[in-house]
Image 1 (tube, rainbow over the protein chains, first blue to last red):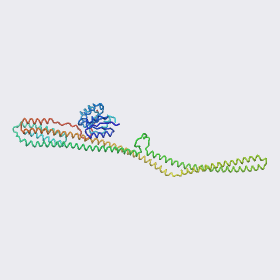
Image 2: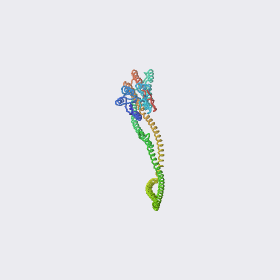
Image 3: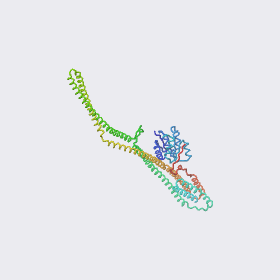
Image 4: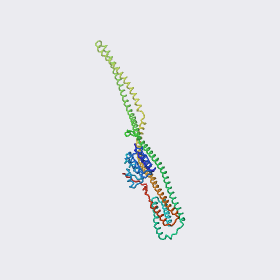
Length: 122
Length: 395
């Protein structure tokens, strides 16, 4: 059975681009517009990995990772931050929140797929 | 009057910065703006202080309304232009967003269609190569269907040709057997002739025995026995002859059947065999060609994948451009707000009648300093200046 990945980004184009790349590799994809929307999507879905943007309205990516990590079901779920941010202090924040990887946009689909397959088996 | 000049120059500086903002982009324009404000309210402040100390009493206060009106108009123009620039920026974002949604949707459709087309092309090439398109449990042990078919056909044609050759050989053997039977018939005729002569001899012996009287009575019994044996020999000979005749009939029938088989035209079968050989060669060539096509398809497929990946990288430009545009928009709104605060200073001065009161001047300049000090160029969250792929870090 295909693994499910939640893609969180306020940009519709990024949500679509990431979905095309992941679906092409055989993953199931669920999308959310921001951190708060993503927290709602965590309920009722078995999600194996989360790819999230950092700068988003309502709830940013780092706050979302912190909130999600408080949920027992998502304590050990791997998070990949996919963002235009490349400042070391921001990366440190992401690491401290519990993210496993930090990818700076624009990304190459193979880079994302490689990161995903390192964190979960296909 | 000097305060008015100072505020006017500030506004002119801000307007220049605004125009640079529209043409150069956020970071450079905001830097120019900050410089302009610093220049307007800082550097001029020094000059003004010196001027005030030199000849405060000599300054002639011009009618403040004559200067305030164009300055207010200039301020309005700057604010309108800035608002208009902000609106245009939002329109660009909107158009960009809609265009990109269409682009991604079309790209996705093309990508899916290409994948399906590729799948069909591979299936077709495999089918031409004689491979089973749908895998089965023992598909690895099976030969390609057309190859297997051609081989079975070749086996049957060889079998028919072989049977035909053997039939001709069998006809020859039957002919040999018929000749042998004919020779048996000749022997039987000889045996009959011997039996007849023996019978005649026994008859003569019986006549001679009768002529001899009592002395020949014993001989007469022997002659009778010889005649009996001769007759039995003839009967046995006749039985053999009849059996041989039956064997001859059966052999003749067999020859007719086998001969008919052997007489069939084998040229069609031989031609078919030659055609099957050609078919096998063609099949082999087709297999090689299909393997080449499959290799090409695989190479094209890799090429398509590379281009799909490149396109997916390019399609991310909207996110980067949108965030940069958001920052420009935020900058524009900050400028508008700052213009508003400068306008309030101007308004206060106007409300006080544009007097050259030192206390008022100090207060107004303090306000301008507060505005200047409150200004800061915000950090850009987007560092990208090209579509070069970003880095990946693992924690």
